[in-house]
Image 1 (tube, one colour):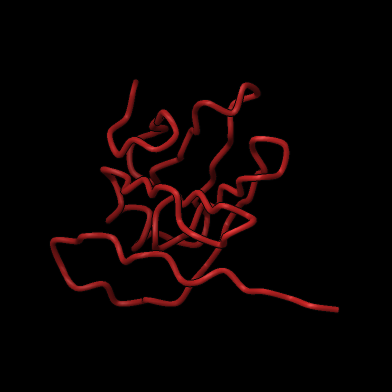
Image 2 (image 1 turned 90 degrees about the vertical axis):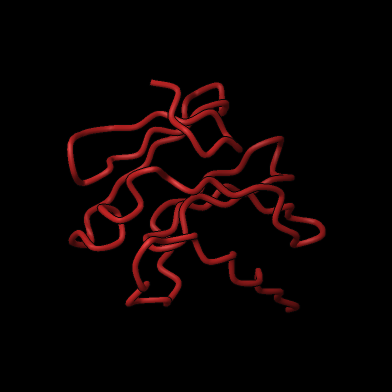
Length: 107
């Protein structure tokens, strides 16, 4: 069996110091017939990986990242059925909806 591990995603740009740099994948979803893997991380936003090259395609840096990062371990995300948007619970005041690949919410 041959296994390959995805590299770590880029750190999010933060105002303060990021206390915990460990990787905590919270949810995953395949897109484009399995060619892309979308991963939501507790401390690193949302990242899309190419499953063939293992290269990062894009990263969403949530506007409420400080609330996602310093909250309890209960952040949630859901990919839309058409796989074009992702909803993130920001652990502060509700849910933010992002188009995949964009770091600002649509709604």
